[in-house]
Length: 376
View 1 (cartoon, rainbow, N blue to C red):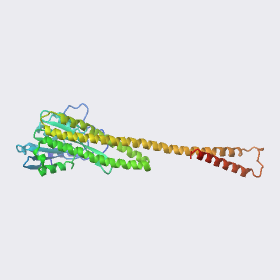
View 2: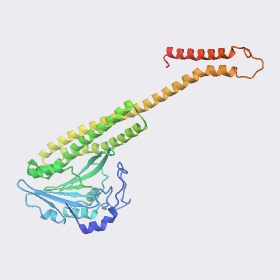
View 3: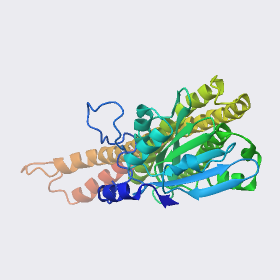
View 4: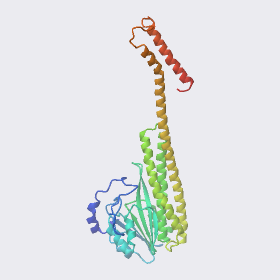
């Protein structure tokens, strides 16, 4: 892929040389836009996942396919042949000038351009006169930190074109590209089917992520049952946060797909709505899995707290039993430790051994009593 508007990117590159730390503002992203700015102000909000903006075009019909990196945005429409469908993929959103030029080229509403740059949106759909604007969330799983990372995917679906905006480079849509190159059914369909294919890949990837999270949570569950510790509690809280993030990304997507499957827009054909209802069923399944894992984590947290409380009770029980055993022994030793001149058995030759025997017998009797009452 090639850089779009290289002169604009060179002027904006110094501000993007040091991306913010990962996972610091995942649930609520830091706002870069000043309060009170005019609607339609193009300001990138979110992490800089790609320092440059790359534009790649795919132009196809049933007989042909043309893939081409785009260096001049004006070529996006000039390269399309009559009857072809164009897919323009944009990676990197930290250069608003590129979004503005594309918006002017495809006559996108200024608020839509603003929303594309605001990566803190929940999944949604907006119906415009000539196109649909769809926002979904791509989730990636970091194996090293066992954490989720979200990326916003914005789709503009027109009569004969599809614009996709990604925060950074991703290989998630490689399977869709392979299907296009193989000349399968997707080449005979329009941009609405292509948009469905991209959303379907995103949703299918959720299943893979939940499987990985489920395996990690099961490992924590085994640790909880065998030898729980403070690190176990930290991991439980970590995965509860990850499941909260997953639910935040997936739950609104159900509403989006429900609206798409019922929408009467001429941009979506009736055949596509059937496919969208299938993806909707997948999201219901995913939400059920997310809720199941969240309930499992809540139960694990309760089990950890109960286990910690039980261990504390056992410790206090043992300390209480030892204190109870030594209480009469302390009393006896305290009585015979008083320095009175006239005391019984003070001058008795067998006084000390007898006191030791009495103290041992008292301790043994208490131990026997505790065993008999099953307190030990």
